[in-house]
Length: 142
Image 1 (cartoon, rainbow, N blue to C red):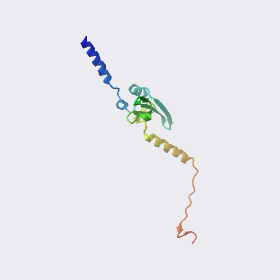
Image 2: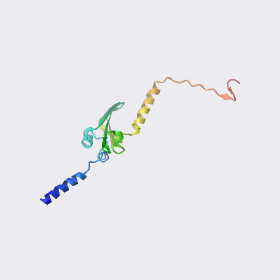
Image 3: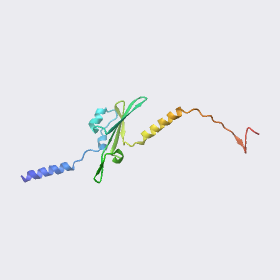
Image 4: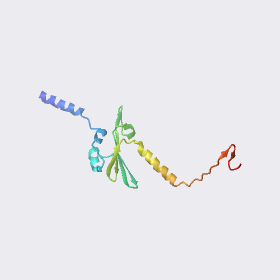
């Protein structure tokens, strides 16, 4: 009976020490070209999704992050998760294009560049005049 109790206690102790794989560890199984279902099988359902129509297709992003505990408070916020505990998977036309940390600033830069091009496309042409000075008088007024 003592052996059975000891065996049971050791089993509980060993299970208590087991950890779940992190997003970083799971992301090593991702490959470019995977389907959404394959990603879902590895990472589970995303916490948030976003979709954008591009000139050459549809881009979809799935965001994942882990909860963070500070003291006795659990935060379920991507900004609190910290680097390595956030993951965004980007699909283009329903296949994996890329993945990485959710706070990847390249997306912000791309969006900013795209917005700037749109603004410049709609701006009227600017007329530029040039006057050359010789001393304190324009060169054309000798």
